[in-house]
Image (cartoon, rainbow, N blue to C red; front, side):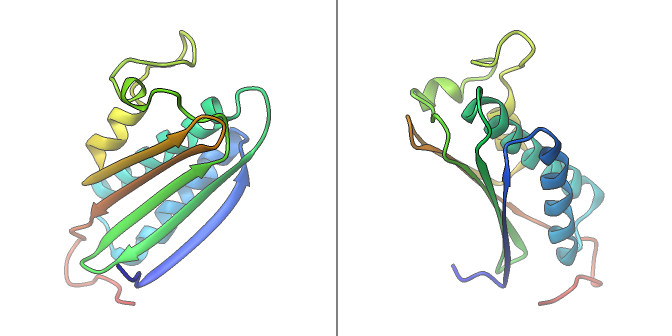
Length: 149
């Protein structure tokens, strides 16, 4: 599907960049005139995906995290978060609610939250090669004032 607009950025896996990624996604989504609820859902899903990359992909080092945003036909926002970290050895297990490799301070709900806030969610990972999360959400917008490309 050909995007109507797109943006991509790469940043180091520093915890300070989680807020940057949230704001970038919100700013990009603004052109689609999202409701406040939709905007909150998007920001939460991006936060979970980027936090997973920061905490789990590079537990003992700093590495690159990529965020790609695409506006697709039908007022659909596609968000892709990708890392080149250690990868997930058992994706099915990692997608189970409450499962975490991040210690007692982690809830293990990241993938569950992303999936529940978005219309579609996919996860690909390979040990030693990294992880990619792709999410899509159809935005209803707030009405006729939607910005057009």
